[in-house]
Length: 258
Image (tube, rainbow, N blue to C red; front, top):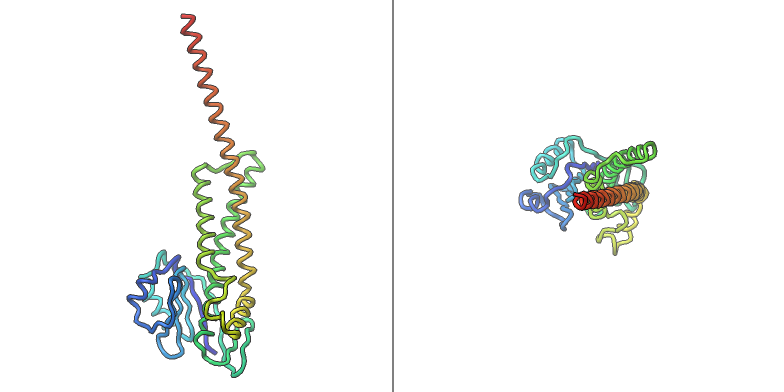
């Protein structure tokens, strides 16, 4: 059995700096990913959105690699989310089971797909935790609105909250390829089947939709809060204008009387 383990190391990793400083043999690169082999039948997969996946590497080897990558991390996480799957080799067999993937041989592109989907599983777990916390926070404001008929959040804080939601949605869209097959799988039936089976095994599409639905619910609530806030500010402005007009009229009447 060959272990595949993926960690969320940081909110982002500087891939340009990694390319310049890391000495392992580079097998694949683009703007979002670096796929290395440090030695025979060992692989390291680094993603711009803070994920790193390892194939057939011991705990001590992984710790050493993480120490080398840490300087290139943005907002390094001391507590790391992770996921794990085992790869078994059986000739003429390509099969995805629970916590195990059976490959016909140690094909580096098949291994890359396993590492990719394992990494996306960890990323989805992180975004699931973030959106769940945001939904809980949003629900607190809706409960207050129901009880008191007004909001307990300021306009500036609401705008920052909306910006945070949009930023998370953009990051998910930019960094996760849940509904897209990697280029390597486009023209190879075996790789495409492996990729689809892995997505199904990790339940990536349903987990992605759950996160997306949570974000949409939060956005709808925040848009409603914004409308209420705008209406309140508009009413305040109207009353301010009315008061100023009344003061102007009173001042004019006093001037005429005097």
